[in-house]
Image 1 (cartoon, chains in turn cyan, orange, red, blue):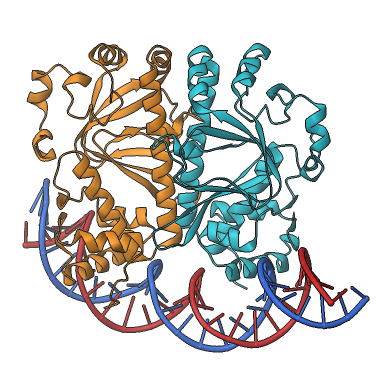
Image 2 (image 1 turned 135 degrees about the vertical axis):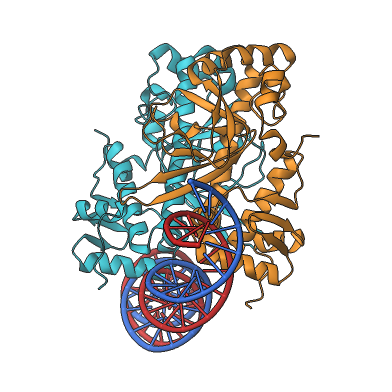
Length: 254
Length: 254
DNA sequence: CGGTTCATTGACGCCAGTCAATAGTAGTGG
DNA sequence: CCACTACTATTGACTGGCGTCAATGAACCG
């Protein structure tokens, strides 16, 4: 059972104590090495470049940077965003430990968005050209990589659905439920967690304003569906939140 | 120089005359075999299953169907859409010749959306397991496949941006400009083309109502930016449409 | 011809954006 | 310790863009 992230987030000791390897990484059941045997994990380990610490608000890569590496998040959280011609930014996703960053860069050989750490984090640098060589030798690895890319496509389709169809309250409920299930998959509490991003970031991601997010939080609190204290969140009625997100339940207008 | 789609769309003769092969397909510079030499194209040809005719409004696959094949569009147009728990559909994309359908199904081994033909169309069935075997033998094919998947991720990010940030007029301009450039890439006129989808489909895709689309068309016409006759479209001022789509130009409110 | 589907146009209302005031929080330096 | 600033969040009042509802028109087809 993994410790809460806040524990892992002081990793100076942990990192130096354990050899940095996929086999020792608590995320290896979610990340690229999923389903590989020990030998194949070692081969993957050998191509992985350095582990990089990225401090809060630091940038891992920016748009138009040449693409060389994918990045697997060891711990911490990131946001990815694009900046359009008019200079406005739009957040395209929030990523957490065990997830892969940079897949949108393969197509044009340059990064298509910026990635910034929401807290002090660590990533594994995966040189993509060497990874592709390895695909020829480890079909399971290749297959899993395709699943990961496909999952990213599905994830984005779900966001498109959210942005295209849902009302503010549905979007926000969907957002909470999504975070909840991702924490659950990592062994953390699905009902108690911290929002690693600002209200503004949430609003930007969901196509809403910071004021709307604030009002939604107050409303959900008043309904007794959740507790909020700053960025600390506790979901009290996941059932109704899921129903809201699915569109099968209407929110009392208040 | 390819013929207009309407010519190709009566393919009974063409198909029987030419051997159905990637080398003979007018889309091979955009599709999976891009950049392969003759020998490798032949190997790809050998794993490709039958060519399937899909009539207008017919379904190529539906959500939760088990995933076996990717589909490359030889000619025609498709739409893909999801149906949520509340029974509403949401269109996630419009696909045309040379594009690949089904990549969102790799992750869960079931299709994640429905694909329906917007006109009489033809696709090549590509058994995914055999394609993965071939990847081990043709690294260029693998690399190009990754680019295609990555491109799909980028495309969806652009739609997220559109749905999350843009106003109705920007969305619609972006939609037109996108179609225009895709037709251009296929050797068709970037300024004169047919909308293969209904106004309702367009609205659904852009997160707008059919009424809004209708009003936008009238407005763009009145501004002299385009001509519209039923589904026949002619872009008169691509520059301003691009500027609108980029967010660097404001539409006169009218 | 009438029925059906699709598109256009207008009137009206609502959801979420905008603007603005206030409060809480974190960080800095005296 | 407090004062000061900068930033983030909350809440209210008002506005406007787009959805909703409804009527009409155009195209298609048996």
